[in-house]
Image (cartoon, rainbow, N blue to C red):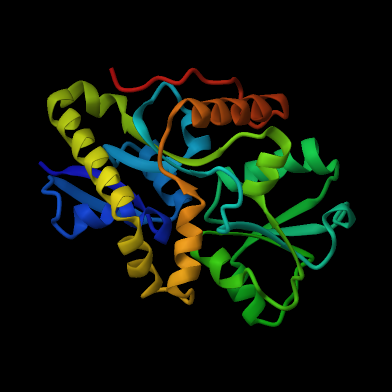
Length: 274
């Protein structure tokens, strides 16, 4: 049977999935695409073997998953696709309402941490679709936009204050921020260790190919976006796909903040595939 692989439906993972979906790297994956929140739910329901997932999903269920080594999606500063778009300076958002994309788990948690640790403000939240809300003529006080939607809305004229959450995290900690990781069902690994081990090799091979051909990937991504080639390449330049020591330190510190503010029960140990 094919290995069920989850794919975040955003352009930022194109360098990893293009070589798999185009056949440049042969594989035995059946790929399921969706927003991070949907993939989190599919993994939690044990309907996928391997998936990209919100980093907070691993923290919520560390006993169910193994981490795939050497692969992640994050930034070492401005990420451009996780933005707080506001009609007011951030310090004036105290007591106001932020519209949060229903597609995000990690970015919403990061916003909560930044409010407490960096900006020292409290707000309320509502959940919804920012694009649809704006098309209706509504103008929330602020919007947390992620993924391709953030790239499309980042210069909206009614939201003159734009806070990049990747950059805000670096301001707070000096470390990279890891928005997404790749995880494997422990049950799947136990049943098919050899097959999944080969699948992980294919996934990492695809990541390496994508990073080596990042210029081609950003031009390809621009073809299906409102961004120019140069804008898309600038976006890709700010992304990290590794999960090395510095990225692990940033991820662990994020989990520490989540525990401090009651967003997870404990700081999980990072268990990679055996």
